[in-house]
Length: 265
Image 1 (cartoon, helix red, strand yellow):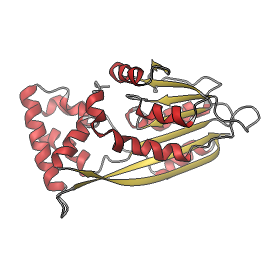
Image 2 (cartoon, helix red, strand yellow):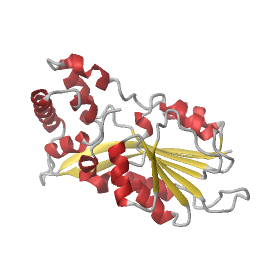
Image 3 (spheres, one colour):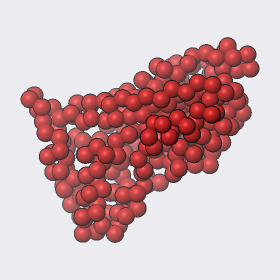
Image 4 (tube, rainbow, N blue to C red):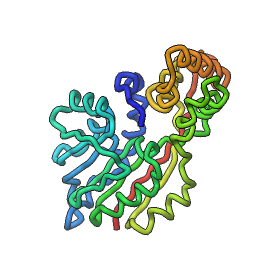
């Protein structure tokens, strides 16, 4: 996993947090615990990042024991600064297993970075107690111009050999039916849906700034300063052609996302 820059990520905090808000709005507020009629008592924010999603959970479930997990020390440092009352810890979701008393696992925009993410979700869901909930949101944008252009430019770059790993770091999400079949046998209730947001960007350069905080990171990290400048210039020019301005000068960034709420049987 490449390094994360909390400041770059949070340049678009409101837009990034919108999907977390929408996911949380569909998370059941009750139905947990041995009797199946309680609010969640122990909540985990998986891939908590700088704590923006954790803050939503703290507001929604103020009585719960809330814990944030992330693989990035820089993100964890920012999350601790933001929410000093919450326990944050390092974890790799490819191997992490939830404790038996976990009631709610909230995973906003993290599983797309986990190798074999569907198998990882099924493994984590299987470890939960009956009635516990796994709530997931993942970007479904690898075929959008914003991400397709990264791969195309990387393959054509004079330093393409440096970027071979970045091209294959993320895999497309499985079809919804495949996802359903992998999880439904573990669930008493399973809801899967998709949303495409259309974020208003000031310019194509704003799209570059957006992805520099997420998907563009592994493409830039292996490069030296001159190579990085070439890549960013080439990418921004390509984005300008792929996302023409609206009449008022606004650039719209379509952003498809997949949502999953799974209650353990």
